[in-house]
Length: 195
Image 1 (cartoon, rainbow, N blue to C red):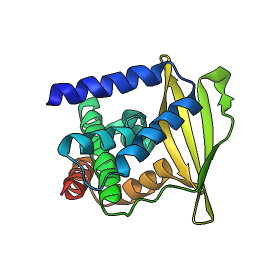
Image 2 (image 1 turned 90 degrees about the vertical axis):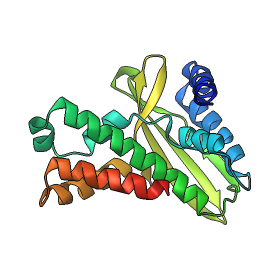
Image 3 (image 1 turned 180 degrees about the horizontal axis):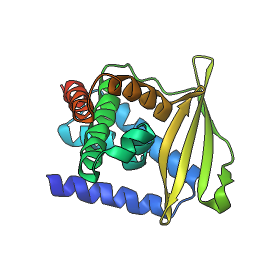
Image 4 (image 1 turned 60 degrees about the vertical axis):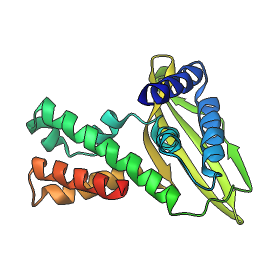
């Protein structure tokens, strides 16, 4: 079963690899909404939702950017890798948990703006306007080139940066706890969201 999940995820990644950033996000959104419209989900479908809701994210980069520089300069590569792994679990499980506990309604319409390229095309920002019940929600995906595809390192929703939000939380925790304790806190949150 795990092998079939990995093969289907690999097929999705291969499909996305040849696309521009806007087409990549559009296709991902279509697939995610298709899954979310189902009334119940098998474990395999939960894994697919997890992939579609966060599979485009570069969690190693997000984890790194969410930590204070002095912490990055002092902790080992092994601890950074452990933190990134638990950080990814926390974000993925949190996303699935939100979807399971929310009644999903399709937005009235979605508008994808033209991408804004930076650093000689190595970085891009894609803005998406989503209207639901008359309210406009602006999401800005900040992405970096990764081979022939794009990976998200920050998602800004109505001017609130996801990476900055985590950075503020982790900085506050590190004022009173060690880095290993921060990893445990993140791991516990990931486990909590997985229930």
